[in-house]
Length: 314
Length: 252
Ligand code: SF4
Ligand code: SF4
Image 1 (tube, rainbow over the protein chains, first blue to last red):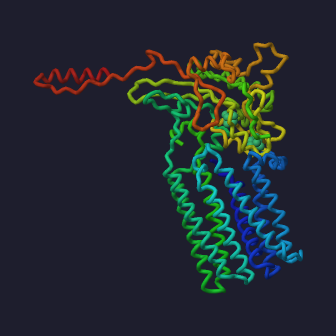
Image 2: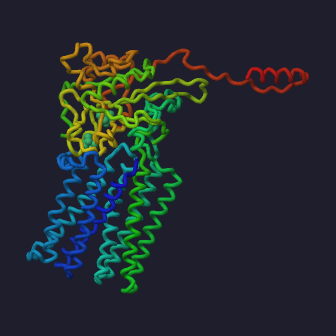
Image 3: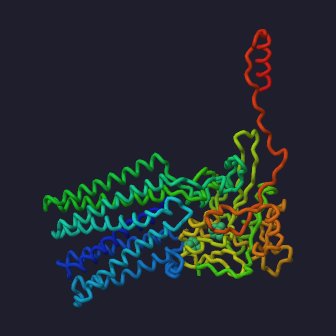
């Protein structure tokens, strides 16, 4: 599948945003009011900013962005619509939580509840995003049990590293932030490796013979004449598959970036002065890992229609 | 509404039956489809760089050619294979649509895109296993076969012309149009007689359109004659060997 940059930016940026926002909600639920207005305010603005940036960039790949509001209507059947609805609803508890957490609203009783509601809506939104892909039976590499967990794990991991980075810049670094980030990063790495093993061992059972229905006993089918002289939309959108060799290299890149992010996170622990550079570095590494992983998620995905265009198996 | 309509007991299922035995791959159906639809329901169907080295555009019907061959066959069979929307009974292209622009009509099962409400997110094209939806880059919306909904019910046309443009255009009569929900209809009987089949039935989309397999011909394929086993000269003269060699060479 063709990896559209707007979709990669959308899913990674909003993923980190939702991860961070959810963790802020948890912090509020656990500790009550933000200890510092500046820290709390900055973290919230970054979280909501990333989410908004992601949502805006997702509309760039629409043919008719001015009609985007229509996408909120079909939540009964469409995961894309549900994602849109969930992403907008999330702003409500998030803004209430922000006002309570930063002390603009003085209703401490509601803080925990608003925090939890925010956490829940963040998880629901990322879940819906991942479901758009995992429910497409036409793409074997997406229709996988680990597609949704990997999306959730990347959101949590990038959010956790970002929280640590922002906290350290404001002098509020704590070891548990690093611990949480390490756990989330390791979880992400493990899930992604399991995902790759899953798609590699999954037999490619769909064949050009089955798709065309033309082969009798023992016969093979081959594309003999293409239906058009230039590439059409189907070939551009569905025909893109990264070469196996490159995929291997990029998979290794994702794993190395994640391992380096884990190392950088661990290195924040021994010294308070080094916490800032290492936590920022850890965030950059984790964000890079997420972007490459998302690109690969598309580039490794093979659509069943490629069979009609001569692919032997998909 | 992108939820699917509940089918009635005698649900009408309009669709095409495509005879792979008689299709000659002339592209008449694709061309007349383009011509009709660039002025009809889906108008305009874009063309890009129409006069350059690689012209491209949105077409709702594409004709593939496949070669079918077993390893021991000397000759292959060539099959022309038109591919367009199959107006599936369980079309995920419809249910994934976030706007309601994609829908399946309750009255006849035709799957359509409303060009006024489509946002061009392309998700429906990802959900279609058959590559039947093509995005119109100029118009910013998705285009697909409409089963010529603007012809088949058109009172301004003579009755015999109320068929999809592709069916009307096919010079070999390889395309048949009718109600596949009615077991007694001409198309349903054709499917029963000729063993019409579904494309990728295991995907569960339940396509309405059916394909009729190419008929078996007695002389359709020449088997490669097994090459003569190499014989030793077994006491025969060198001259025999030479002639055998020359014979092999000349008969290549
Ligand atoms: S062929 Fe594709 S576009 Fe047509 S109804 Fe089936 S899934 Fe939808
Ligand atoms: S491209 Fe249009 S018809 Fe297709 S899913 Fe998106 S809004 Fe619906």
